[in-house]
Length: 173
Image 1 (cartoon, rainbow, N blue to C red):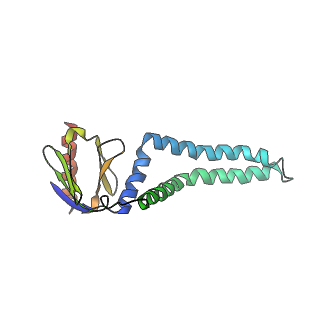
Image 2 (image 1 turned 90 degrees about the vertical axis):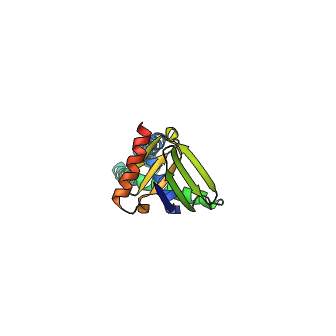
Image 3 (image 1 turned 120 degrees about the vertical axis):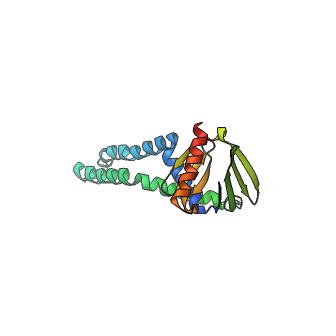
């Protein structure tokens, strides 16, 4: 089976956001940061009230509201921050080899990817796992590296199912 497609910056950013949401260490880090904001806000009214004549209940209300907002919106902020950082990293250098036309071929031996900069081959036994999101398939070759396959490249859902089944059969055996 063969697919021809071109990755976009948006594809790469979406991969990084998806990976951060699935990575145990990133999930733990985001969870801790999500909890630390409200934890700090709990103590702030007691500190701030020492320096003002405003009653404690007012500061509890203000910082309690801030805690709720922080907790509710932190995941969106984390996603925005990942997007910002990935864009910044992409601006640092030449990314021609990342966003060019490529061909992905599934063979009996593994996956071969060909692009304008060369060809790479990964044996089936070196593929960690396949992850599927609403818009992408990620073929992980390590804990942090994956072939990104946008679902838009498939002609129809049958071709997509055939692709997924072929990979699943190979990596489960």
